[in-house]
Length: 224
Image 1: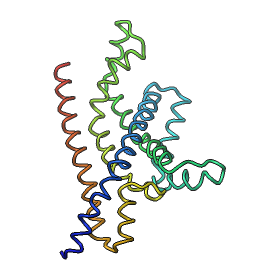
Image 2: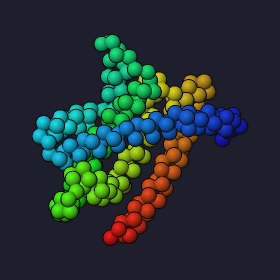
Image 3: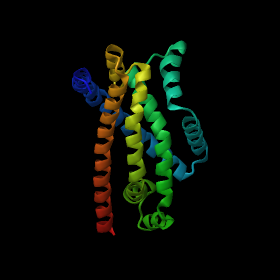
C-alpha cells in the first residue's frame, strides 16, 4: 500500500467518523425511539383485540413490511412535494425510518406480549388492578425482557440501514464517503473504511446488547 493510499485513509477517517457521530447515531437513536413508541402502541392494540383498530394496524404492518425502505424514502422525500408536502432531509429520514422500523418491532412486541401467560392477566384482575395497570406493571415488563434481544438486533440493523439516507441527501457517513471517493477516485479503500466504521458502531451496540441481556436476566431471577 503506497503512501498516497495511507494518507487518504488517515485523512478521511475523521471526515467519515464525524458525520457518523453527528448524523448517523442521532438519526438511529431518534428514529428507533419513535419506532418503539409506534411498535408498543400497535402491539397493544393487536393484543387488546380491538377489531377495527386491529385491522388498521395489520394493514399498516402489511404495507410497510411489504415495500422496500428505499422506495418509502423516495415516496416521502421526492413524491410528496408533488402534492405540496415538503419535508427536509433529516426529518424525512427520521419519519420514514421510524415508521418502517415500527412495523417490524410491532410484530416483535406483539409476539412478546402473547408469550406472557394469560393467568397473569387474570391474577391482576383478581387483586383489583385495572387493565392499564396490569399492562404497565405485569405484562409489559415481562414482554420487554422477551423482546429485548430481537429489538436489539433491529437497532443494529437500523444503524446499517441509515446509509440509505444518503439517497435523500442526508449527510451521514456513507454520503460523506461518496464525496471523498468522488474527489480521490479510491472507492475500494474508502468503502472498506466506512464499512469498518459501521462495524465498529455495531460492535459497540452488540456489547451493549449483551450487557442489557445479562442485567435483564439477573433482574428476572431476582423477581422470580
